[in-house]
Image 1 (tube, rainbow, N blue to C red):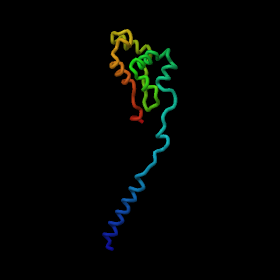
Image 2: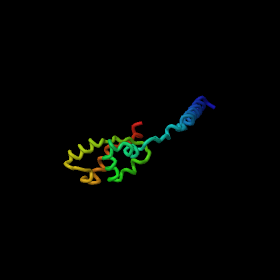
Image 3: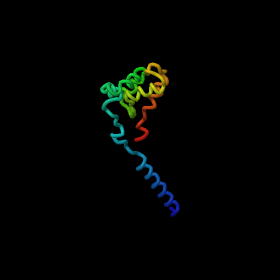
Image 4: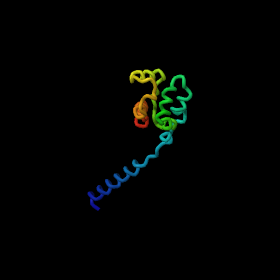
Length: 118
């Protein structure tokens, strides 16, 4: 066998070895972790003096089911005072004066998918 053939065979074996040893990596258990504390909805229910307006908006729009589940998202919850300021800025007195679609858009604006940023 010539030196060129030996070198070629060595390079093929080396390349295959690199792919075999580098291609398979197990995902660690912590990658499967989902937060098991309070959901957004349970937090709202436990703090109605501060967040009842947003909770009512969630029920009104049907998005309470989404935020009652565990997942990889974060919700920046506006306080009752912030919600009332939002109504006033929009020349409204209550969330019921808004269209469901505009309220859904406002709720989705408060949610980020933390899986993208971790």
